[in-house]
Image 1 (cartoon, helix red, strand yellow):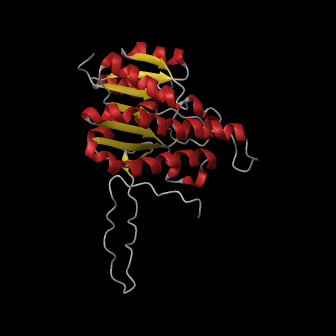
Image 2 (image 1 turned 30 degrees about the vertical axis):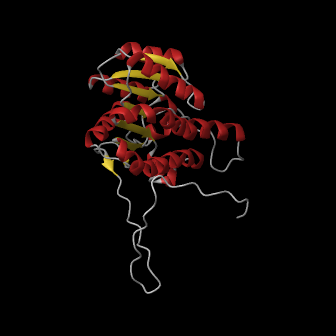
Image 3 (image 1 turned 90 degrees about the horizontal axis):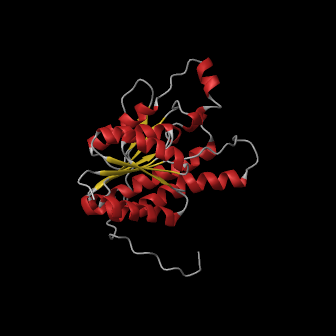
Length: 268
């Protein structure tokens, strides 16, 4: 058991995950490093004085088991950084490779949904923070890989929709949306970016943005991360109000909390 706050970092064995671990350790957290590559997780954990666990984020029960282990060893969980992700490895106009597609959705979407589901009971005890890694491509998809952008757009929508339901539990949830980051995942694009002199973010840039988002206590936000600029909360245009038949604004809809499930009738 520990009085120190505890942070779980999925994908923690990679470059950005390791930077998250360093940032959180410097803030007084005990970092729990989870990665499919257990050896990489152990290396990072040794660097930051944390603990390491092998984890396939696409396995629902494995996420729950890990949180149970954290609670049994440390007695608490305060912050969760859901960073694990994989590229699709597929160009936009190629025939769909179903195996690659299923792998990307399992890690990039299921890994976030399963991670949040596992962590919510523990985070609800004291309140806490959830940080999800998305991508700048969800905000500017013009030059993005469509299938990768699909997965990261899904998690951003999930983050934004969860923000209000989590407020009564004192849990904030936000998405980091970085542009190109200088990591091994960028190996195929790096020569082109270097040739064109395009600036890259560093893993430490992304980790510093994570710390900034925690400090702001914002929730439900997408944070755009671009080289040379501070983390920027993305401002969505307001939705036009609904109008009554006579042209007057419709009253605000009051939904029950939680919203009751709709009975299934078999008809559409």
